[in-house]
Image (cartoon, rainbow, N blue to C red; front, side):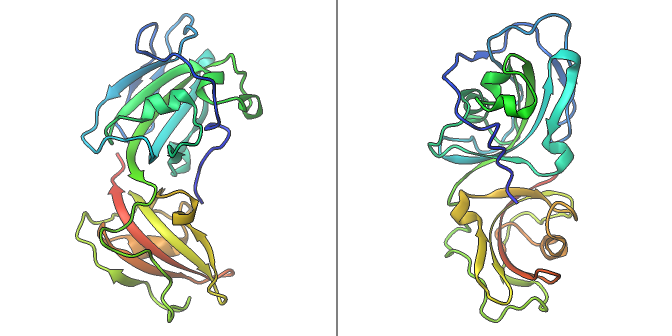
Length: 268
């Protein structure tokens, strides 16, 4: 369920990145909403450029974080959309734990406060890594990327003072959702972004099939049908940040989840 975009996050050679300068696209729209991007006439230049469009007031991201961000990518030529996480309702997950990530992404995302909007204008070869030919663009194409930084979280982020979650021994798919720990943070609203860690076990074996703790850290999802398992929406809406919730998911392939709510972000 996590969205890593491995083709986008692969190794690139070190590159010089300029802060602003040159002919710049104009970006309008609020943080958290799909940006409107106007591309100027003329050539974009060949040096990657980063522009901070707005500065948030959240925690600054640091090396070692799992950074959750929405990103809108388009080609400079013809202002052609390429892809946008705003359309799919699931932010990208970028893991800065020492593995090799494009230098342009590192400079765009690390050291920025949560809530910031950052634009990267760069040749595709430096914006998306050596696997760019597999993505349908040429390494020589210039791309415009607009990041909305939702936040940076330690890979082992968990509820303060709590042990790792485990599936309750008496939980079955027929049970209603169960609050295991009551949080005291902001309430989660249906349709908002929710940042979680979770474990998932199959039924009836109760074998753990998935765990965000094993795979690198928190994920963010839009709390609405189609973006998360249907059972999550009613189970998590109205809970508070800091809660741990056991969520049975009946159906053709029954599952048992325990979800730790680390944060919530209201969409624009």
